[in-house]
Image: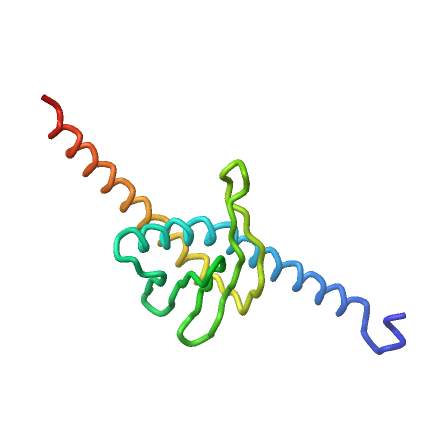
Length: 135
């Protein structure tokens, strides 16, 4: 049937592989970014009460139950609806996924390292405070 529309089967196979690759990259980005984004936004809300966080060339923002990640030049990279289930596990549903590039995944890997530093710093501070209370 594809031959009727003039699409060479080998070209169609390449297009399907390209779409599969695009979907894998999108899924990989969301699997990395969403948990980190939720923790960073929660931290930002605790620290400053702000529901947005500025990166070098992008912004992460909480809009109701949605997380939106915008790149300054490429626009909206992703928008997801986020909830916690009864077990407390994070669940998310993609609403929109824009043009995803490898640099987006790299940015979230860096963000994860920054988040780990924040967590470790807070834990050290908590330990110091707890030691000060012992009599």
